[in-house]
Length: 139
Image (cartoon, rainbow, N blue to C red; front, side, top):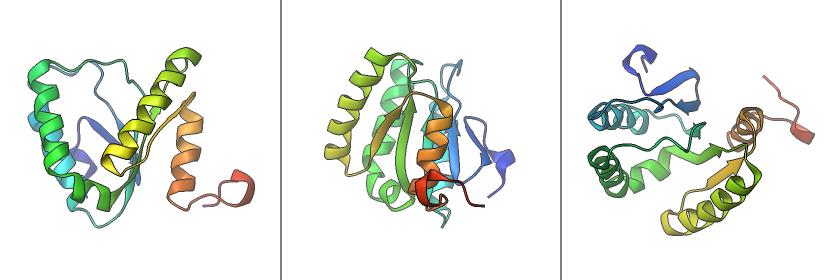
């Protein structure tokens, strides 16, 4: 997979994929969908980390992305081990975790929330089987 083909997803730590949607322009959903297609077509599993859950996509972009996710959920479940959101605010984190539980039940895919980017990476590594006992990283 050519990392240069991705703009809204950072693959520098693949199979940990970091969403980069902050400041995305109107109409970015077409590029986002193309990138998601490349991710689900790739044979390797991945974990999606979303560091900025407060970014609000334009209505049309949000609708297009939700439609793609809904139509492609079986493919997404086959490749994506989990979505992990990062939220530093304790109250917002609690709400996000509760929403994630509902989303996990609805879509059959883990939607997790953690407080720091470091926790997100550690959680992703564990989900991918890249962490040793007690959470020690093993490369």
